[in-house]
Amino acid sequence: MQEFHHDRARALLEHAEQVASAEQVQQAVRRVADELNQRFGNPDEQAFPLVLGVMGGAVVFTGNVLPQLDFPLEFDYIHVTRYGDEDQGGQVVWKVIPRQSVAGKTIIVLDDILDEGETLAQVKQRLLDMGAKEVIIAVFADKDLGRKKPVQADIVGLSLPNRFVVGFGMDVYGYWRNLPALWAISPEDLKAAQP
Image (cartoon, rainbow, N blue to C red):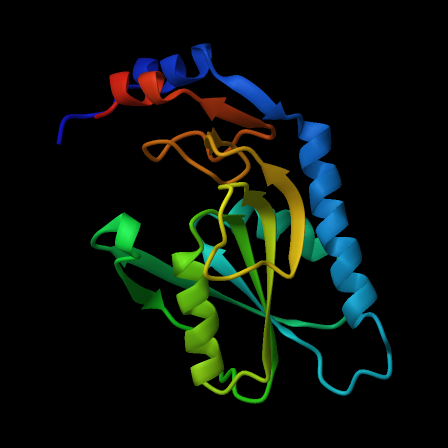
């Protein structure tokens, strides 16, 4: 595979359209944190949840939302990859499973975006099969595909149009996860920059 040069990575943003400002991104994070705090901030709760960040896209979202949660929690991460036909869902391969037992626990899965939903649907089912009491999916963004998805997020920070979006953990060819705002890149620019 030929090397993806920095000028090509920068060129991807030349015609990109901002779909959410850095302030809107932070408001979305606060929205998710507020909903989680309302749900789990009750001091009478007997067991506190296990929060699982989905690597690597959710690393930025997870790092921003965790300090805003005001209840005791356990934290771990999972890493899943999808292989095969994207349209048919492919096969989800777990690179990292939770290091501790999920049995009997309430699990909060933090992810950057609910796109097609196939991967998160399989993650939720696997955690339930492992004995989780309940699985709550909290996503930074939900992409509006105009059709029903195999899983719905319980908590959503913001809704995005059905476009290719980068920033705040979401990448293009491995770049631009570090952007504080969200940018939509056109299919033409994506194709032109393809490594």
